[in-house]
Image (cartoon, rainbow, N blue to C red; front, side):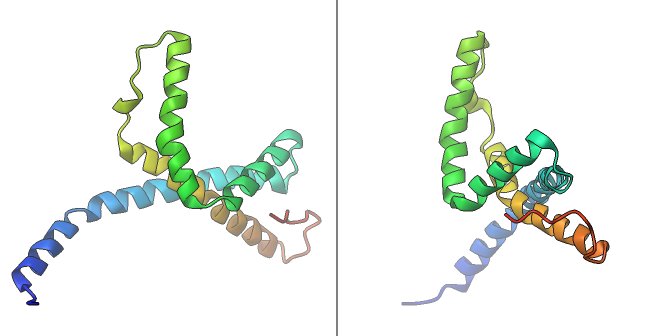
Length: 139
């Protein structure tokens, strides 16, 4: 077995071309996850009547299922749902027209949300010196 340095260099350069896409997925997903996490944290922190229970169920579901399940549900389930909705509404919409990177954005932001929500809630609790009358909701 021989190691071919020219092949390794070529493969490395091909991998470098994917770095901008990787960074784009990371930035968009973390930003979307932060926004979703912020909204659910506020809903739980201020105990908004319906939103608090919905966000608790959402976070429990997302934390309780593996990320691969999220990817499969979004990759296969979301296009099927959009196709049924489009047919029911009479729209001419092809779910295959949605770029696959869009599914990655949605999936990774959903997965990042509970982490951001918990971090934000913990930061609010520490900012008040731990003496806040509002209890940090446990998830």
